[in-house]
Length: 614
Image 1 (spheres, rainbow, N blue to C red):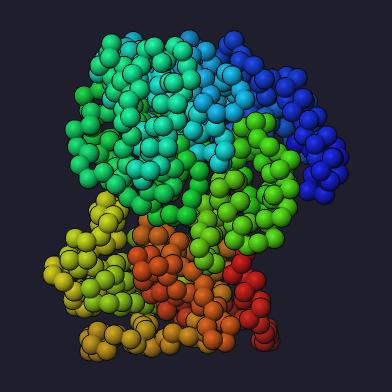
Image 2 (cartoon, helix red, strand yellow):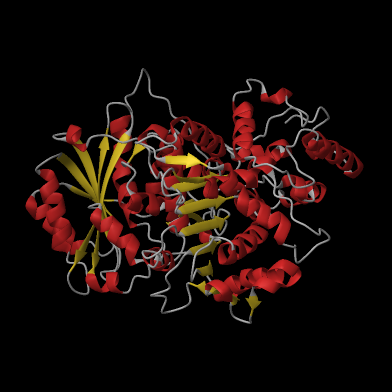
């Protein structure tokens, strides 16, 4: 929303204070910000205000006094989803109905029975966006049985948006107010320390509430509701034996830190005996770009963008984030990632941001944690998540039969990943990348994320080779089989560890060529590959493993200050990308058709560095 003042980042402290006071009063004047609990459920009302914002043509003229709520693209889609669901509720195809009283019940519990354990506030006031999240999760029920529609919910918001209070309050609600006999409530985190922090907050909330302290028995390691034989405990991914937990409610904190699905899958499997179990994932964005959260986020985006396909009808998604990194310099947009903004110290946020944005490391942390955009601040990434998202086009690979391709392979250690690639230049100026990875059984056995490997294997992207090393004949056979379908005019390779395989390829009749692993050989192709990704011209049919490879590539300087790709860490492999980059060395010439006299241009190292930072 416009401030009708000068740029917020240019304001001095006094101007910021005056602006912020006026902003909050503007929202409070019509209910966009609640100072006291509202007596009715605001789920649908919130969705309508978000849609009004989406359908406002000139958003630059909006002020805090206009009755619209700025929201991210995917929160807007969640609002449309709710309104469309209301239109078809109670039908045979969609037997769910929205019950305001059931949606409002947990909100009333939080506001009337729960006391904040910290701060000056004596009671909780649930804000309109929380009415939307909580009301949706609990208000959608089956028309006949009354059981809850949503079995899972992803609540994805920036930091300091009331996550701890929400986890604590809803855990206490599910323990004693949901009506489940023998309910097992789990507060879950990646580490036992983190799960204990949240458990202790639930316990402190019980101690601070006369109602809850009489009803529950808060012990050191669990909270009990004796009347219904219900218990609440803290668990983490560090706990070895988690079978048989019989979950009725589980709240996963900061899923962005999870590296695999082990704890999540155990809890999902344990809910089979419950009539209406609920699992919530409450988190910000993070730096583990190949973990469970990224999969959940992508599933949420697919669900919200494709309403008519009715994907994930029983999963609720609230994805609050800035729509573009450029919005970071406009505090008017911060509410998109921080729907609880009116309860934050906005003035300090602005002054801190103005200072921190001068440091690349601090700025990246703001982008990820406060503005909720996935990134990896540990290194300078080759491409951002936003750039990868531009390259989601799919094609029918049958259309490639008989087409020309350049091959590439990357042989890492014999006991690790080995990748082979075919790269096709398309008539559209795009490229298609067909990738396959080989790994020995021993490497699979010791992998910490076998669920991810199993998915890649199921998708046909990975072959597990018996034994302790990668038999190069498997790679040879892959190229031979592909040569029966496509015209492979050259296979490129890094000469390290490739002598025997290359001789086998040549003996079969393939034309092979060494690609030296240095800036002179790879700098230009790397720059061109990134330019094509920025233009959305790289097609890999959304291969999960190739996306993982791209996420894992970081840039490092050589001794001449040239930027070269390498992997983020020993566990973050880039073999598929390395093989594709080798092939791309020759693809460039096949994509470019000279028009008139040739023009020679010079690309400096600083130009390449600036490109890499896009």
